[in-house]
Image 1 (cartoon, rainbow over the protein chains, first blue to last red):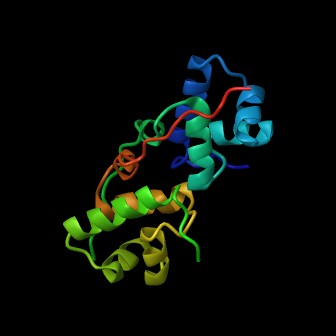
Image 2 (cartoon, rainbow over the protein chains, first blue to last red):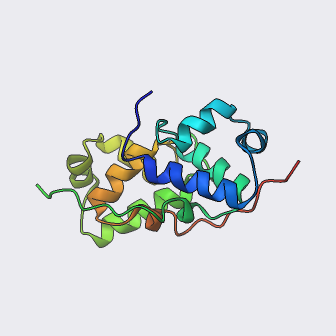
Length: 80
Length: 80
């Protein structure tokens, strides 16, 4: 699968918080019912997950969803 | 479609920010290339969108993604 620059900051945040919580990918898989490989792909920025999957990760990592997006700095779309 | 309580805070944030920006759903549709009906469903909390779609909305609304999740207060998943 290809890394998507749009998804890398979220992946980095998941990996960093997982490690801070002392969880392995296997542990996070157990808490979210997402396959361990899927978690690896999410952390590498390869998986365009849904909001519900992101919320399951936030709950498992015990953080508010906004924190998973704290690394993003995006610029506005050009107006028509 | 059914409203999903997990998705309502995000929908509320999109609607509120859209109005603050003085945009109609039609305008937001033009900026995001999402169909106007899809935007209505997102605002009602009916659509489990992907991270990339959420980022397109954030760009169009000229906000950082974290701000779209500022209304969420979630509790941690139960540990095994």
